[in-house]
Structure formats: C-alpha cells, structure tokens
Length: 256
Image (cartoon, rainbow, N blue to C red; front, side, top):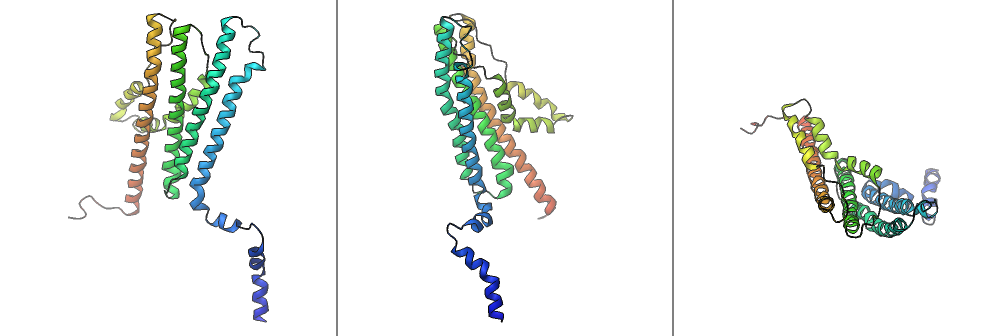
C-alpha cells in the first residue's frame, strides 16, 4: 500500500520529467543567478526601441509634410540632416547595448546588483548617450559653420530626461548636504554643467566659439558622468558600512 501511495504521489514528478523541453522548474528556481542576464536583455530591448524611435523621429518629415513649407537649401539641409542623424542613431543605440552587456556579466549578489550595478549602469547609459549625441551635434555644428547648412537635430526634450538620469549621483549628494555647512558644494554643480556659448553665424568669431563650445560640452558631459559614478559608489559604500555597523555596532577603539 505504501509503495502504491508513494508512486501516486511521485507521479507528477515522473510525468514532468518526461515532458519535452521541460526546464521551467530550473529556470524559476535558479532565477537569482539569471537576473543580471535578464536585465542585460532588457537593455538590448531598450537599445532596439531607442533605435526605432530615433529613426522614426528623424524620418517622420518624409511622410508628415515636413518639406511642405521649405525650399532651396532648407530642403537640402533637412535631407542631409536625416542621413546624418540616421547614421548617428546606430552608434547611439549601441551605447545602451554595450552597457547592458557589461551589466549582464555582473557577478554581484542581488543587493549589489539592484542598488549599485543597475543605478551605475543607468548613470553610464544616460551619460554616454548624452556624450554621443553631443559629439554628433558638435560635428553638425562644424558642418553648419563651414557650409551655412543646418543639419537640424532638436533633441531638447529627450536630452533633459537624460541629464536627470546622468546626474543621479550629484543630485543625491546635493540633497544630502542641504541646510548643512557643506551646502557650498552646490557650487560644483555649475562647474560640471557650465553655460557654454550657443552656435553663432557661420564664418564669424561667435560661430567659431560656438563650435568650440560644442566640443567642450562633450568633455564636460563625460567628466560629469565619471564624477556622478564615483559619488554614487561612495554614497552606496557609506550606506553599506552604516548598515553593517547597525547589524554589529562597535566603537573604533574596540580592539584596544
């Protein structure tokens, strides 16, 4: 009787083991080791979505009447701008894919993955995409300065959101020092995000300074990125140390 009962109770497992392509249990039970890989795949999906949306926004004037009120060199500029920014869309989206790949290779535990590796990856993604867009915009400014033909590329609304993501580290630091003697650190925010000259007219000193400022802006974007990564890692390390101290409090001279 006991043997029959055991066989009956084991029947679901026996049948499950014989089902084709049945690796669902191991997939779920070993999910903690796969989370980094899943997040990496999400970054790949994000990279593809960004590419499609970028291309859609760039090529939208072709079927949305974007040329209706243009003539002469304005039409040439818009067509060249479409080709230029369509080309730029691929390396820009590839930045997201590369960050996702490095995140997928992470060997951190779940806490470090979610609260350290993932936020740092978000900061890097936003910063690198900003820098890449800024670099192509700087190249476009050189073209406009030499030929007087604008390649367009009004990405203001998208860049604003990226700047917020890229400044997570400094935003957290400045929030923490509010109403403290260290509040003067906020002055560094202006240093990391200076007001650079806008583009002037072609073949003028103001235009040349605008082109120079566009390339300097890329440099400051990268500096701001690395500063934010360092600050975020410092804050995370500080909080981790505090949590460990709360779990096992001790005085600095405990070993004396």
